[in-house]
Amino acid sequence: MRDLTREVVAIARGQPVEPIEEDDEQASPAQSPPPEKASWKVNVLHAATERLRGAADEYIAAKLDEIEARVDAKLGEIEQRIDEKMLDLHRQLREARDRELRHRLRLLKITLLFTVLVAVLSLGYKLAIKYWAG
Image (tube, rainbow, N blue to C red; front, side):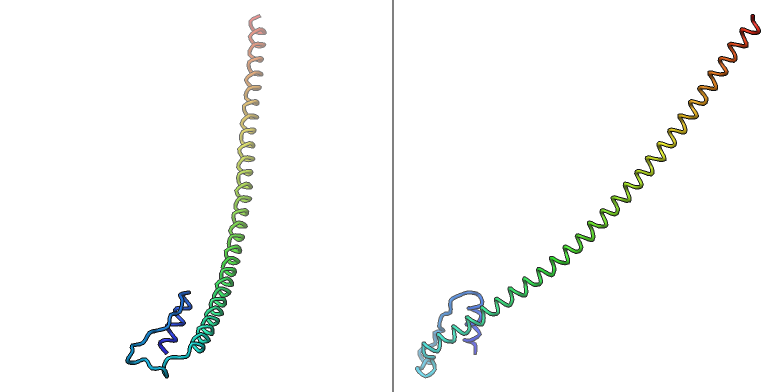
């Protein structure tokens, strides 16, 4: 059983399978498998490990696709939030600019009104001086 486990691990690692050498005292012709049987066992183990590798690769690819889909969804959500915030900021800036322009226009109107008032007072003063002085 240990030999089988070692062979499976060696094949899974991609290492060549070497027959395990036993001591001369323990080795007997009846215990060592015939070369055809050992070759068949290696082929079966190799096929099993290839199927396992293929299944593992497919599983990993499926999980990576799933993770990529989640990441894409999150990025799409983040991009949508950023776009909404940008639109909100543009709206706020436009409102602030409009308030500033209204305020400056009001100040210009008040300045013009006082300038006209001072001009009228000055003209009235000049006329009054001519009328009383002259």
